Image (cartoon, rainbow, N blue to C red):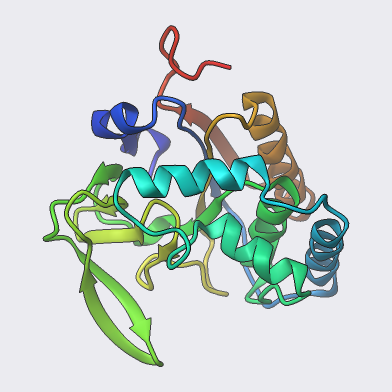
Amino acid sequence: MPLHAVSVDDAIRELRPDFRVLALRVSGIRNGPSTPESEAWLAEAEAKTRAAAPGVHPHIAAWQDAYRQFGAKPQRTPSSVEALWQRAVKGALPRVNWLVDLYNAVSVSHVLPVGGEDAGRFAGDLRLVRATGQEPFDTVREGVAVVEHASPGEVVWADDLGVTCRRWNWRQGTRTRLTEESTDALFLLERLEPFPLADLEAAGDVLVQALAACFPAAVIERRILPSPVSGAGAR
């Protein structure tokens, strides 16, 4: 799936004009189990959270506000970065596979929601939209595969077959998740004010450098969307 097939609906711009997502399309890689390298990344991220100043980080607070704006309760369904941050403080970040470990470490270290998807498993374009309530979402509940539906007005990432990530970045679906067999990936790094755009680019650089070091022949494309408009979150 090329980057021009990723879009952010106008309804999202209206809800949060300050929203930007750095999309990274990476092909020609080879995922695998967690390694000592990915373990070191996660351990470093855990140490960083324990050393952080007490209180709610401003970027986590911004995501809490965004969730309330579309009717979600962040205390029940926190943003991905808040959920990871809480686990990191306890030294309990999940160890999943090399690619997931990498983007989780970047997420926690930069206090930034980061998602990773298997780019070969999408059906049609990928869109960030407000749900109608009819879109199916494949997930697992208590170890059993189930199909849920997004709530009307909920912010979701979706393709032609349904939702790939609910509540903006709260929970990814099973259909497009990165597995140890994945060779093509799409990473989504999501930012709200007051998180600087320069820091968003820097987080992307860290992810790209780790991928390029391990896979020198990988093809990596990047794009920030939606394009900034005058006076709308262009900082």
